[in-house]
Picture 1 (cartoon, rainbow over the protein chains, first blue to last red):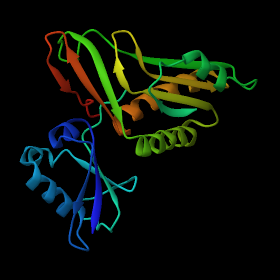
Picture 2 (picture 1 turned 45 degrees about the vertical axis):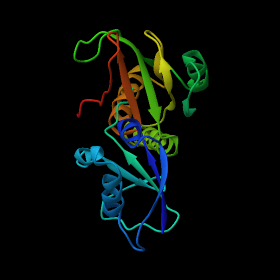
Picture 3 (picture 1 turned 90 degrees about the vertical axis):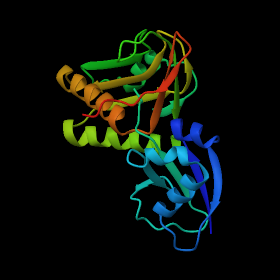
Length: 81
Length: 139
């Protein structure tokens, strides 16, 4: 299945782009998506603890299962205001 | 109005929007770009980035939370994204309410919650050419 990944701020810079597609086994969870991204770009691995995930616009845990065509947002610690 | 924008902020437009004939008070807040970072480094500008598809709904939830906690009032909040120079406004909030205490309370609640919850990011650009993504202090 294909997942569309959106990356922001420091994660966007480390991945080199704000949007990319990754292929995962059917039934994979957010954690597997993160592992696949870390394999592509090991520099993001230390940010695992501080990164939150949005699935189709809603905050989810790393255990959340993904579905084909999902949008997965990688959200670093916020700094607005 | 609850929005993310690339345009310069117009606080007066928000004040006009929230003021009704039921209001005895309008409280307004502007967050502006300061010349020093929280760790005292000289700053010459900021870049803000947002995920509007999650940021705007979260801002709407904050306003709903404010209504639940503080009662009836009118709220407008707009955050700017893109490159901002010293002195420019990054966030504008206006609250119209029957009495001033509630207007101040809601205004403070909205900015505090926005800084804690809304997916917006800030990159500080220092006068020596360095830059850093700066996260907000945790409450």
